[in-house]
Length: 322
Ligand SMILES: [Zn+2]
Image (cartoon, rainbow, N blue to C red):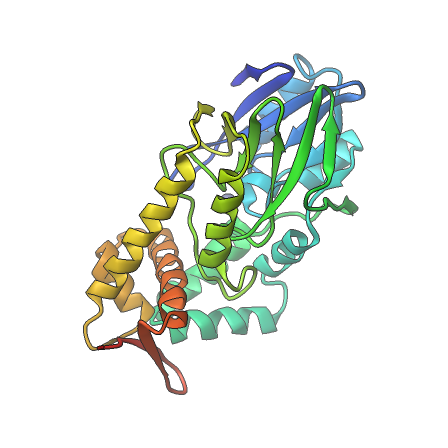
């Protein structure tokens, strides 16, 4: 059982994942009524099996509440199933719930929006078909919990011995929830602040309309808080001296100058993503590279470092020469 104690009254469950990264973390916080779950794992037979085994062993006291940090499938994936099997309330932001519905592309207008957006930014028709059928509808879409409760930014959220404060942050997703207990110095960060890798900050055709600005804002928020121990969505828990936000900021500043430096003439987002990240063999990497490129291009466009030329079907970016 991939279950271990990571802090007083907090257990970590490591769930298998097949998405470029081979696992994600779920946390369980002890409270009187049972265990409060933070994130749920992707909906796969292996992950359901881990939950079922845990319920007959260490987690036999059951689940009191379910908190979902954001709508990506490794976090929201099994929330509806856990709610059905354990009859526990699900806490998630309404923006994340809306994003989860859109991500499943339930009707033709959403599919058309995806086709237009990715086509306009230079992705091939074949890649777009894959994105829609195999990525969004088969991998990214999650079952939606039948009933949910919201979480308000800045409010306290008490779980057992912990008095968490709720942070709502854009950038990686539209309104990701992180929980911070200032006196314990503990942060449940979701994907927002990982130790070794940088979370994907991408401009999607839905969700956060200003991801890089919002991501920087969340880094400011982390910096202003007393965070000593991070329980992240991926990789190990880690101690921190407070310098991680500036490292992440520096990474994106570096990427901004890299994108700007690689623009030759007029380029689509896709062409620029290949110029910076190289040709990606995996289609999922091509998608993520393009989304990350578009988030940075949006920033450069706002700063008037680049201009955008739109014709009926294609957007191209050109560096402003001063
Ligand atoms: Zn995520």
